Length: 307
Ligand code: G3H
Ligand code: 13P
Ligand code: ZN
Image 1 (cartoon, rainbow, N blue to C red):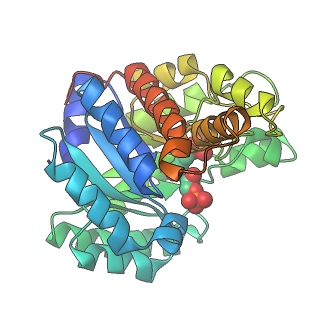
Image 2 (image 1 turned 180 degrees about the vertical axis):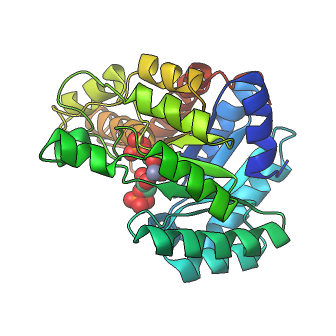
């Protein structure tokens, strides 16, 4: 059943769990996510990035997501992830396919971010589409040369309060020390929990944690064993994600873990079964590993059984 982001996050807010937003780029990833959704009886958010749209096409991804949503009674949100291109966000809203869009104006000057987010919110709300916005730069601690530099890029709670008031967005992506991709931390995964708590006190919409992949040890082991060079990859621990949820995070974005599972499944299969050329056979273990990863994440988020 296709629903809006507001529908799933309102329930998550009341019951204090988070819903996973998983990126789709192809049929196999979508199937793996939906298998996990059914197995866990969880709500789910299917995210399409601008890169995914370039790769597979907006209409094609929408068709996959809509068919998947039609085939289940569980709540499915079809979401545009990191819409940085204003015109693309408008296109997604006008397409009638998306039930949620993210306008990511985080790289714009604050005034421009507020202005554009507000316009997107007005346009989307007329069509009953939810809007996620972003304030602060989601990157890694090691990206910034000093602590002061890092702090300048993390979300400021008072600014978040003003941003919410001015834009009326439905969910807010915050920068509290996570980073996109497989290389998030040099040592322990530590988020800025104090900042997260202050943001949650300042704004009354659900918070979104981007860059939340965990780089699971078992998946990383298979990847490296079969030739993938990711030995220093490090993700956000399950403990850190759970703690962030106790502080108000209600949407958790995961893409890298799906990529790693896909990679692990394919590398292992091709090495062990070099005689196979049928893509359906080659991709089967990759799909199964992705389903395991998503099921695990849903349990960590507390969304299992909440669909
Ligand atoms: O937030 C980024 C997601 O992992 C999507 O990545 O832009 O390479 O599709 P992408
Ligand atoms: P990861 O790279 O940690 O999976 O984050 C994905 C994300 O934030 C998508 O918006
Ligand atoms: Zn993201």
